[in-house]
Image (tube, rainbow, N blue to C red; front, side, top):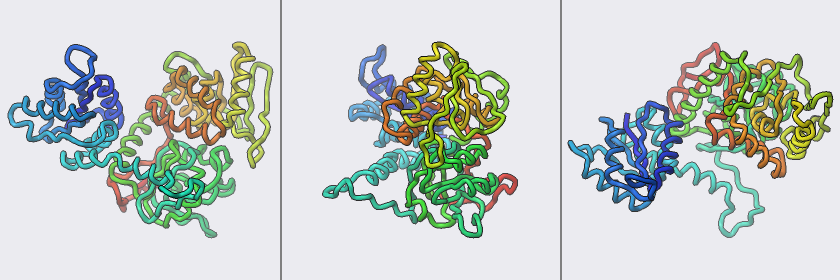
Length: 458
């Protein structure tokens, strides 16, 4: 397995990039930082420090070096001259972006790719971001009000919607027809109605991608209760996905990939392994109290039933939030609802405030509720272990900052995207998905073998 060295004029920047890359690539990848100058925090790069980092990351398969600014290249070239035993010939200096390149390189190295292939992937690390932003930006000379043409769904794509049920799933696109679902895989629907949701079989439906709908709809709630990753609000373009196309769904970030690249597939395989380990830990600790990383305890109780409405208790005071959604109940992530919760917590003057119902089991809501000062959540019995583990990964200071930001936004959709970004940015707060579908061992094409017991592709 190749080694990786991150060179930056700032020692803190180099250390941060290494931390991020290790989180994605795993502990088995040798990644070393070479930032700043010897003997202090002064900005600059040192050939001696770079050479030492290469030695620490050394592998017989070679080392890839990523650099931030032009003069770092000169220091890295000088470092190669300091290496003995002809090792400089097995080191590649990459012109790829520092952060994205290091992450992609770490993922590729963990997958066992050769040095030349890892270097090529690091060089092209900005392509997914560039394609995504190009699709969202109006073309020169065009009106921003003109609707953007949907991506070609016969080629690799990534659609962004709203996170509705957490987890990662991989499988073939399956369309709902008059005779029901066409087979095991990722279900594509215009909107997941309660009637369709009732038919969801986790052994056949690995994930749900919906053109319309809301994360608070009954269909989304049912998907969450069954441990099926789901994304809503993907737009009409998703209905053009051809039957049988290989899809990857990220219900936590609200993303749907078609024919995901090798790099994306490798990154999600690592992500799934982390989620599965976290889910196992959550189940073994289900009977323990939920305490945040900085010592705040939150009571998590199992509901005897699953009420449709959000109920808030502050001592003897109870409030039924007025219905604002088409289905007659509030979207608990509307800023006005969150602000009402904030007000109630303040007026409770130390009396614990509790939230019962769907909100407590929604991964996007847990951090916000804790940040607002809610200290008791009553959730569906199947959600207790997951919600407790979510709380254990939280820092209340970060959760308060997240909640304060959410109160300044305009809609529940904006709040949900903010929460998704928070979960993605803080690996410690990433919510586990119980029974996460396993990723395939190969990228780009499915393996014909399948596990008929749980419907996962191998």
